[in-house]
Length: 193
Image (cartoon, rainbow, N blue to C red; front, side, top):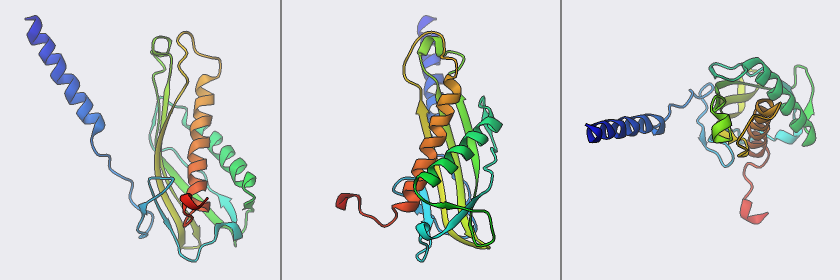
């Protein structure tokens, strides 16, 4: 009886792992632009005549389609703050207006895991899947899709007072940095740096 129970549990664990490790469907490409594997994000497209340093930008909100135990509205605010901060730190212009490139996108999945057993495991995990475009009118000059995951440092015991908020800020910052690297360093060979 004990062996049978162990085998059933083993089969169930394998099935669960197979379900979590399978291929993930990617969000549909924005418009009709063909995205290719990116160097810093999962997939990207850059128009050949687009120079990101010579453009002013406006930001649209990145709505969260699916949030799993994560505060979606709070994350949207954090993401917009980090986007603005990183854009300005790189010397890129942020100006509302008709001649601006519009950065818009969607957060397809935002997840915060491990909060209930954090006292035991010592960490929580946050993951994100997002896509977006930079457009001028109807013309798409940059498109991207990315997925990433970050974890808190291992520290068993009670959670720090703002641990979830800090982890979500770190997730937003990492996503924005990867986006900016893909945008600004396209076409540059990392071996020549």
